[in-house]
Amino acid sequence: MSGTSLDMDRLVPEKTTLTLGFVALLDSAPLVVAREQGFFAEQGLEVRLQRENSWASVRDKVAYGLLDGAQMIAPMPLASSLGLGAPPVAMETALVMSRNGNAITLAKALADAAGIEADPQGPDPLLTGRLLRAHLTGLERPLKLATVYPYSCHHYQLRYWLNMSGISPRQVEFIGAPPRQMVDLLQTGQIDGCCVGEPWNSLAEVYGVGRIVATGHQVWRNMMEKVFGVTREWAAEHPQTYRAVLMALMKACRWLESHQNSEELFQWLSLPPYLDLEIEPLQSRGLFARHLGQRFAGADTNFPWRSQGAWLLGQMREAGQWQGPLDNPVLDRVFNTGLYREVAAALGLNAPLADYRIEGCDAEGGELSGTLGAMVPNENGFIDGICFGLRHF
Amino acid sequence: MGNEGLSVMLVDDETERAAMVEQELQAQGYTVVCRLTTTAALRHHVERVQPDIVIIDMDSPDRDTLEHMSVVNQQNPRPIVFFADKDDNPDNIRAAIKAGVSAYIVDGLKPNRVKPILDVAIARFEAFQSLRSELLQTRTELEDRKLIEKAKGMLMKHQSCDEEQAFRTLRKLAMDRSQKLVDVARSVIKVLEVL
Image (tube, rainbow over all chains, first blue to last red; front, side, top):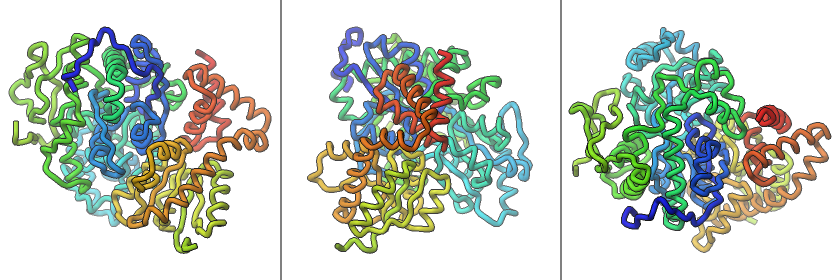
């Protein structure tokens, strides 16, 4: 892929009118900004953003060409390439659009009963886990916990935190529900808790129906969350368009790093069909809750680490969704690190030289070799302090 | 016809469209065991009814609930991409997705038993697209219709999209929020008017 380097200053997109899909979550912001701030237009692209109501329809519409590309949960290109949950379609990503932003929220009544108090500084996930576990021993029924999609960081982070807290999956009934329904389901007592992306955790708190007991950022520090995904077929047929889209999205991500709580961003996200008026209650407290650690750019934020792909593969195996060795060649096809470096170079940004690293080990001060010299990556680590790496590097 | 014993569940917010599909399926000897609009209780209905096939609007937010069920329990219907036949070309699949049909079937069901059902759904969904504006006129109050038209126009302008896409956006918003189309139209107008 990187062997067919193009002149990034003079991209002539094969296709200039595009439809890209998104799900109404705060981390759809890079796509919204790229359109509204004119970064797509700068690249000669006219982009229509199409709201999708489920991850399943994002997958299907990208797979069969009704969308050119889309915001995807990080495990989606991998799951789709492996044929998990649907017939296999080879997909890839060259850009991580955001990290963090999920949280585990318990119904307020349950949190109260378990003695879990609200903490404005953010929750202590080890303490909340212990309290929940202690409370469960007196509970006769399994805990009903919802996540948005079986192949998602939400699902895996929830399982990880439960495991860490000594709560067995057998004590839990996992169900799937769309993000928007979580607040209602919590309110009506149909679920005991959920792991979902923003703004739904913050809204559950604002409406007084839920309490955040752990953030995704605490469970897995700076793991990839949403990626820009396309089919490999589309990527091969539209190399210049693809690069132009990535350029625009990377500019949008960088813009977001300094404008996360700007009035402008709030106004754009309040537009239909983006998040519309649903985010209104968050205006006074700031759109992005600090302790959720949502990140859009800087250091290696946008780099699609294959080692993180291997980590996700491990989580799929852990959840019983997939079997096989983790050093799977599919990782090299799904996480297009070469193309990322190419786009970063065109924007004058440093990018990691390695595709794989040991995840979770920040010990040595963590400097990495980059295309433009040494770089300090984002802090990374897992709540249980483990290090994760494949044997071959 | 050998269609006995296959039970179908329809999940669709467009009640007229669902009725059209049901009628045609029944005429061909299938049993439609359950017809639902978008619902938070979909999970319970599937567990109770145990359908062989679920036909669900492509844009329904409940699809992810079904996908989750199929992963958790092998007995639950699993997603299929229309026809498993190798001779079917991707254009047919695209057409089906474009018509807005998605389907979930229980394990072990043969494609040739499912295909006629999907063909019915796709044909009815397609036919409904042209019927829709007519239906909107007969069942919606004039005032509401004006609001929907206005919101559509504003979305077309802001999102640089065509009429069909603007309408679909409104519908998706309505489905996602379990709101009436006219209520969504009102909120869209409120937001876009201040721009």
